Length: 270
Image (cartoon, rainbow, N blue to C red; front, side):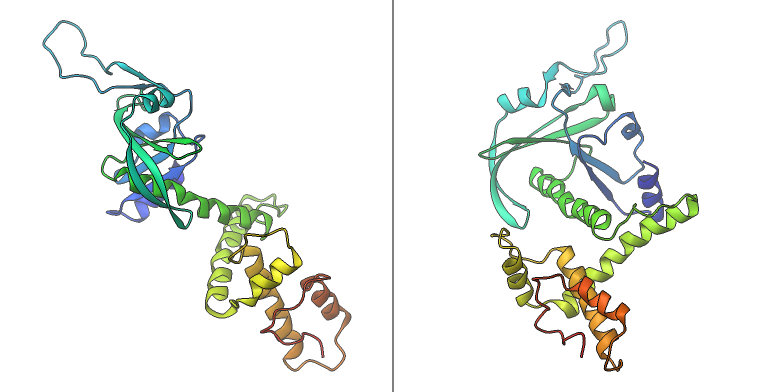
């Protein structure tokens, strides 16, 4: 929540739409900064309530919530579904959508939320959001968009090594992890502008034939291409006829056995 508050303060006047999985919810969401909405997956055991009715002049405190609506499964069983085309994961997918304006009283108290139900032939997804303006289709697409962000986090951890540095000083930790995340963008930008070649996918599928449906490069492919290009330029750009042992080791590490060099790169050692 501190990061969201900092981000909202850095961009005053702009809307910030946070998307998270089912683990990121709790009473802290009751105090979202202005202009910030939160969309998350609704836990299966979350109990929802209708909005309280109009206040009536009767003794006692007015009700804080309306009748019990039940869990997401209960809402789905009684929902009125609307067919829609949702653009998720790079393609248009036919889904049935439904929404309910209600209260998640156990978590967000009396803050009005919307529950978005998205159903396909296999499963039903239940989202809860504090965004009361966006359409159900836009919210389903927004939630699906978190996949690219999580993939970037995964690439930073497993490919770039973010979080693997054995730092003990707080300032060092605060520098190394953001730096690894920062490097991610220049690698993708370089590949998109200078490194892409259609043969890259063919070579990867030839070396790893189990990727039968691979149609685009992964971040690891982009980083490998950049590493090979940098090694090629360092060795072929005026180096001696006989490379140093360190240079040979770098080339062998870049080109694993059985993986051919890219077609649009020069031979690294001459």
